[in-house]
Amino acid sequence: PDVRERNVLKVLVNRSDRLLVQGKLIDVRDLKVMAKEFLTNPGNNPSFSEQEARTFDALGTVNVSKGVISLKNDRGTSYDMYIQVQNELTSAINELRDEMAREKFGVKFSDLTKNEYKDAITKAVPVAISEAEPENIGGN
Image (tube, rainbow, N blue to C red):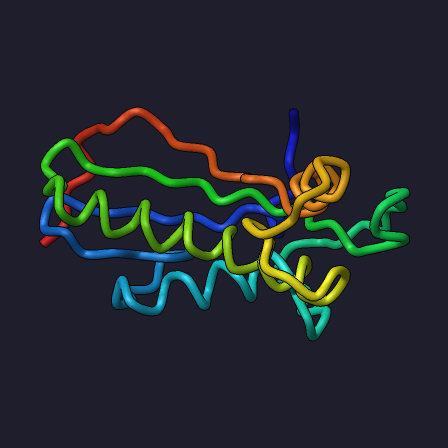
C-alpha cells in the first residue's frame, strides 16, 4: 500500500557499515531510541509518523502508528552490522509493546497470560519493518 513520506523511516547500511537514518549518519546504539520516537511521535512532530486513534476491546482507545521502517543494506554490509541493526529495531518494537503492557496491565508483554491482551497489543504496536533486497549502495 501507498505510505506517506512522513510515515517512512529510512534506514540504510552502506558497504562500510555506516548507518544512515533519514540520510543522517548515526551510531547503531542510537537507532532504537530513534525508531521508538519515530513510531510513537510523542511531540506530534510533522517529520515523524502519523498516529491513528484505534479502539480495542482489551485496551480501549490508543494511538497506533502509521509508521513503517524501511531497511536497506548494501551487499557489502557485514553480517555483524546487519544483526546489530536488526536487534535494535526488534528491541524498539519489543520495548514499545512492554511499555503498553505495563501501562494497561501492569506487566511486561511476555508476561501477559490472556491471548486477547497479547493480540490487542500486537495490533496496537505492529512490527512495521520493510526490508529491501540488498544491493550495491556504495559509501565509505
